[in-house]
Length: 168
Image (cartoon, rainbow, N blue to C red; front, side):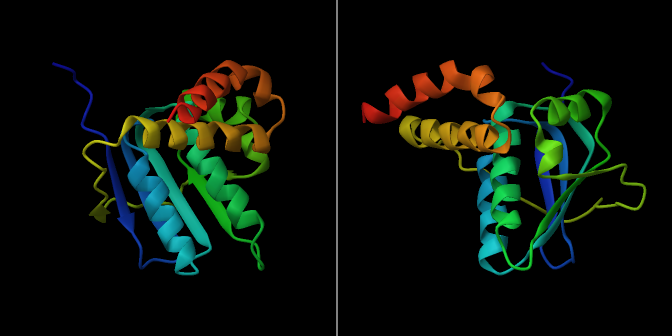
């Protein structure tokens, strides 16, 4: 049995900025609810978000691609929206920097960011294989849009996922 806590996303949709606390590992397995929540908040004309990563043990490229897609959407809004990510551990900060996301996101030390409570998001129990492939593909395309240098890093993943989606 793993010592890792069950991943959890706590949200406060009524705060300004909208607050999200990431607990545990954020990955392709559990980021659908975050993507849907962020898209829903943007549809409700929320444009300011802060994410607290103090309790986040790690994240993968799909989760980071979801954040990149949100940041791209927010940058295109008038007035421009913001996505602040705060209290990253050293490894998570390195991932964000290596993928060029510091061009899109505001990285903050989060001294004033405390999002310790809120409603927990629920992920879909089982996403279909094609739906999951589309979500992962979209996230990685967001990373390439965020920084063209990511194309070389993810070209094999994108090629594989495009084939998987086209075989539907």
